[in-house]
Amino acid sequence: MPNQRRHRRIEYPPIVDGFKPVGVKMRNIDKVVLLFEEYESIRLIDYENMNQEEAAARMNISRPTFTRVYKKARKAIARALVEGKAIIIEGGTYISENYWARCKKCSRLTTAPTPLKNCPHCHSAELSNIHLPE
Image (cartoon, rainbow, N blue to C red; front, side, top):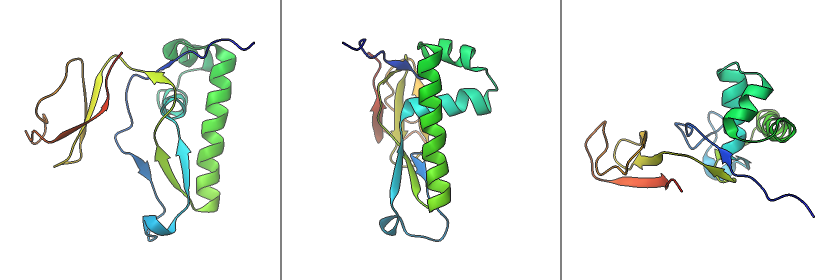
């Protein structure tokens, strides 16, 4: 019987929902899904320059599990680049200590330890909650 799946800790959500090839309409493109924990593995290793031990500890998972998540993320990104597919960042098994909200008016993403009533950038009350901490 497999072990219970641990929630992967995500510190910062991606500032965009995804990427697409230039000059092609979204409705004409196949998509590749990059899970939030896969995005976080790329952020920690390739952007924050951590080693896999540090990144695994930061995400609260084992190093072998981190390696599998990171490898899957790189495969998804490579597939999107080589095959000209869009990358959509969504879903997964994760937790975060902050609230995540995207403003419907200015499209900016904000994280905060408490629920937001207004966008801190444009002061709009039109916020869409993306993640609520557990």
